[in-house]
Image 1: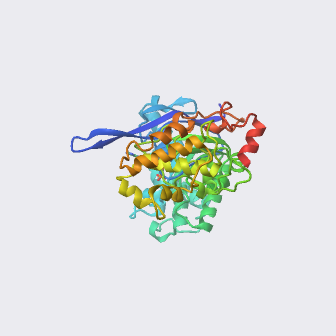
Image 2: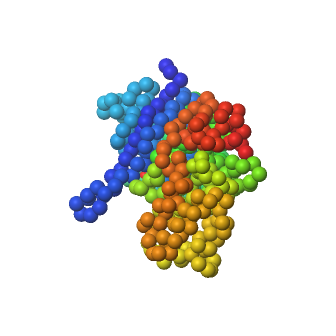
Image 3: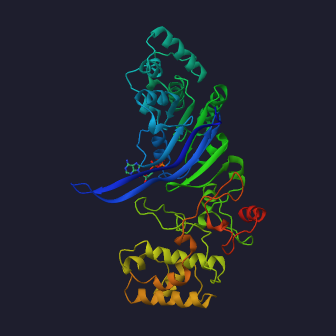
Length: 431
Ligand SMILES: Nc1ncnc2c1ncn2[C@@H]1O[C@H](COP(=O)(O)OP(=O)(O)OP(=O)(O)O)[C@@H](O)[C@H]1O
């Protein structure tokens, strides 16, 4: 018996985007795009990331409720794609799903005893008295021992309903619970009560839990290890305490609500993101997918600009490729009065003259082209001198420290500004 219960290897789930009556494929949503992680026996593993980054699709693919388009899921060392019908049934007994909205597991016309007993019946426990005993015992374990098992779900509060959903997941004695946003519909106190209950049950039954959440605080409270997911890929993973105390990836730093600056004399906050907008899942950015938002986007080695100026220039250029409908739309989005150049500089906090003369000349040329009415080619001069490695190359998830890998070019040894040693890397990330 190995320590690893669930192993997800290069998991991929791409959805076709179709159009028209003939459902012609016009694109692809790479909801999960090469994700790998292991969940060990008895551990709580967290998958964290903003809404839409592919967490639920990962869960559904693990359960084979969505068919993966690539990669492999192994449970107890066995690829689940090889499981026959009976083995798949057994697998679905061993791995239970708890969802954000417990209502989806309930039928209003079934009592809570019937709701919790249903999986037992489906999986072949025919003795109704035995079922009732197991149900009452399970309800007691989730803290609902005093409630009448013959009451109906609508008689319970949100937190109690989630306890019933947990009882329903637990009743088959699973090895792994996949909890997808189990507490995000609950308020403060109830949230910690339900998390506390899950923790108790995890320890008591030596369960593994894959906890999926957009809220890094929930993961921080509950999980031994964590993987941070952004637009279908993992950008960082490691023991939760390490990732939370020393986040390497700017995206993890953003989730934690602080984006440390590269320059210790500058104070940055999460509002310093280049843009708050999550890119279109069917049209992902090139290179590092976080680059259009990243406050730490790396300048080319020959660009010599203070950080704020660099970020202003790059934010302006990336906004042009975001696709304004027209020059008028661009003008309307700019603040200030005066000519186009001064309004661009005011909006993007770019000084009247940049200290790097090559970038200044390219910026002036870009503004001239825009002034002449050409939106399409306007960013070319600026792109020629400011294109970042973060736009060109997708960083690999690499171990800069074991076991705390990160996918960010700031940790590529050859990159300008990259920390040269592990110790330096830590200091760099903390600044
Ligand atoms: N059946 C589908 N067809 C097409 N696209 C899909 C489908 N299911 C999910 N997606 C897309 O895949 C991406 C990832 O969605 P997913 O629900 O896995 O993310 P998530 O991180 O769990 O977010 P949320 O918490 O909002 O559910 C999104 O862009 C979503 O629109």
